[in-house]
Amino acid sequence: MMTIKIKNLVLLFIVCDAYCQENAEITCTSMKEEIQILREELRVLKKETDSENMALRQELGAVKKELQLIKDGSKNEEKRFLADGEIDFETTVMKLEQDVKMLTDGIGSTYVRWGRTTCPGNTTVIYKGFMGGNAYTDNGGPANYLCLPDDPTWAKYQDGIQNEGNKIYGSEYEHHGTNFNPFPQNMKDEDIPCAVCSTKRPLNIMVPARTSCYTGWHLEYTGYLMTIKSDKPAAGEYVCIDDHPEAIPHGTANTNGNVMYLVEAVCGTLPCLPYVNGRELACSVCSK
Image: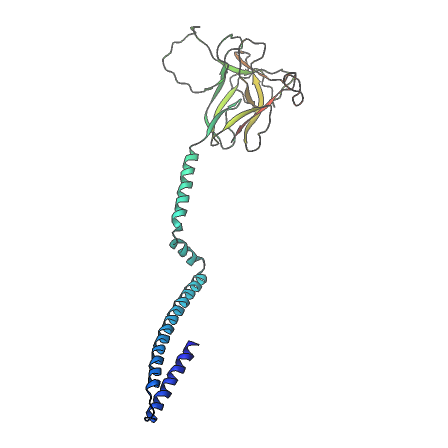
């Protein structure tokens, strides 16, 4: 539209100039003034046209650039991603993930697998050895059990029993013999091994009276709850003996020492149901 207007002004200028030349007797002053005004308007129009053309050319260039980006697809999208500086954010996230991984790789927990010389699944054996504790006839001393390594080393010592402190004995399986045996084979009077296991999971618990773990926890092993017999003077600790136990291979002599019995539920203050009077309790070791 603006181009047509400019053409009309130019044509009018030519016609007016010719008319003045052919009619010299007519005063053309007013017409010349109008022509001058038209010239000024023409100059302004040209300037506006040039500005509009420049804007159009810039807009066209931007459109062409955008079309080129679309055609280039993911490659140019990646370049635009880099140009936006978002690569710094991605690098930071990757570094944080690596830092977290390094920290979590060093986190874990340990537990004792009573009754076995190996550790389950992806866990690692720290050491294996023999279960030990107080003699069942002792009136004093600690109640907890220890997993004694099978390769002890010694500091200062004096051989011979001095009877001035406490003693530690190996542990034996003691169940009801022919009355009830929860294990795949007869383990009565067999000596109990153990293994200290390391897992990458930072938490572990022993859950009594359960053969499985609660939601979100991983089962390390399951077994039976065992401890010292209630009519013996020594104190004992409740531990979870693996339900497929091994024995230390040096005989089945009934030497007693520290002895382990199954644990039965007793109704009264312990509600029945869900517990059953006289039923042997299972257990599970769980990690998370």
